Image 1 (tube, helix red, strand yellow):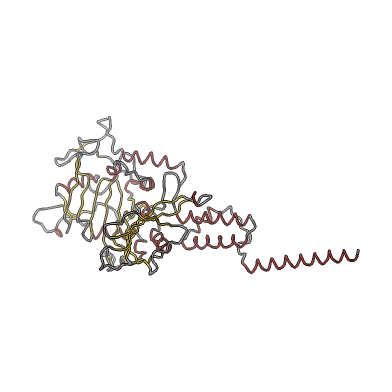
Image 2: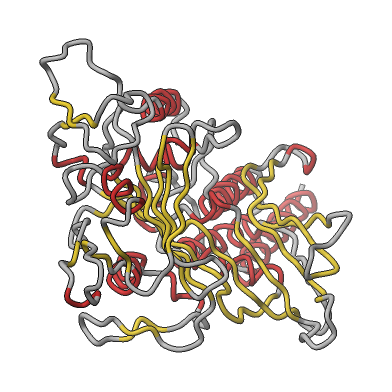
Length: 439
């Protein structure tokens, strides 16, 4: 990412965290104070009612937690030098004897000591209990590495380098961030009514989270169960120390969220499911957690999760749920904004693009030094990565200036060129010898 853009994003992100700012003009906004209202973060006297622009009805959608299991080969971990490296921790985890932090290369220095690495995942190996397959391992991606397009391809690349066979997803959380819902215009009002049991979720127990300002979140179901749903004030959480996440700031900026309006999150946490998931609206299968590409289409998955697990209605004591007035607080047909890339404060951390750029730079250096064979090998490798990860459009824009001479040089052509050179040299020697003898 452009380094000049980041400070702007950070400013807008900080403004988003500031929440609603009370107006100094009392006639500018109308305030409503229902009996069960427990107060907002800054304005405890009522709910600010304001018209939300269409852009704010966008929903940022993304994966927030990805953990999967795999199988390690008979030869153990095979750390192939290149994009990833392992660093073992001093102690294991609760369920595994050994644990490794996985790092991905983000920038190449002049020497190996100058390379820059970023932690991208945690690997757990060697189960502590004897009845579990000893080759089983668990991999959990770092949070920011979930916020990217093609995260399934990242997992495939990681497994390929470490020689790990994918088994199944153990836990995947998908979520939506938003500022407006179809419920009296206020996500906070919706959570307050749920806490007051004015609304009811089908088939799930409810847990309410509070602080001194009031209701901060609602959880339906338990994390230990097959599925749970959580809705909470994400802006409030982001204010806590150490919770600043630039990749979320970038996504909020892309979704055109308005500064001064709180951002709320609806999160679906689903455990391992080895059976096909069925879209009840179409009757089609979404696949199951044994397919590494199951997470490739987040739009389809989050629609399934919302329709399957977010069944909520206006509560009436003694009335069966199916007879209650159903609530649909979000428009799930449009307005989805998805993460496209990773970002840090100063640079992009797109591992594939970084590798391609470094390879191209090395290839050009070899070409300039006359090493056609090495240059050709590197160019071919870069082209394979471009084709494999569908980066042709980016590659053509990024390297439009690049003029590559004799990219298709092979060992045979080099031998032919060398043979021709020797032939001409031999001819020249014979001519010079002939002149010397005739003189």
